[in-house]
Length: 72
Image (cartoon, rainbow, N blue to C red; front, side):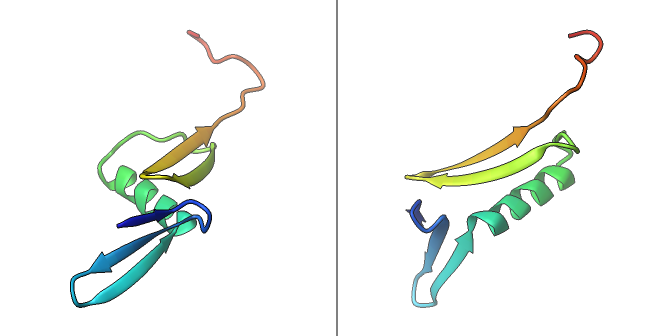
């Protein structure tokens, strides 16, 4: 596996079977889909972003509130 931050992608290599490229957008969709199936709570109305860095993937959720939710 090779992280390509400049290209915003991950390159996966398979022994004798070539390579596949996963973009940040597709990786983000896969991660959100996994979280839904694993019942990991995610904010529904959040702005979602995925950033590929050297040896890491960062998934971000940004929410905006017009009022502070009760109990906060």
